[in-house]
Image (tube, rainbow, N blue to C red; front, side, top):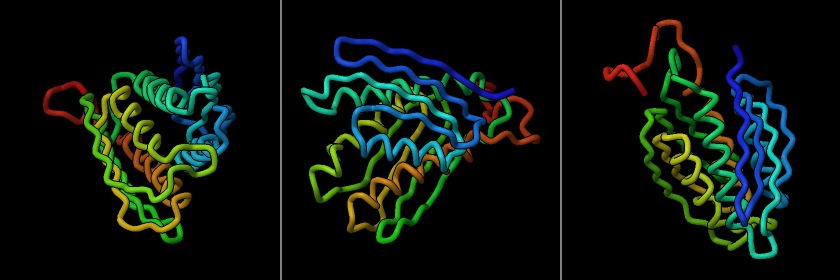
Length: 195
């Protein structure tokens, strides 16, 4: 069975709908109103082999903060719901991913407990129409909505576009690894009996 979720969240600041299939083929339909953010989510989808439909109507006349942060909340909620009880999954995933001058690391633990560490400094305020400080806000929101440990570290990088793209792709590869089923795991990979 495919692991899917549909999530809708509406506030005074944003109206977001997400349809996620963790067992997809990398298809996406992304409309956030922020072109570079669309590009990053398309890369996440393609490199994680997820199918993602995301539509956002946000208060971009203010700035991109609410749209990006709330996108993380909704995507994280969809990941959590699609995973269900997490029976049989590997739970852990990591990726060290190069993109030209950038080398990013991402590690995840789908343990049910949120923790977020982000070690990356950007040298420009914007890439395209995305405020670079919102990259951290997005992944923070994802980690807390899923209930995952999420560590992101940039080992090297000069070009901020490459750095951000490497982070999104490394996250995709790490998450893809963590959600894989392992026939040796009969219930959940925990001595507690639940995740």
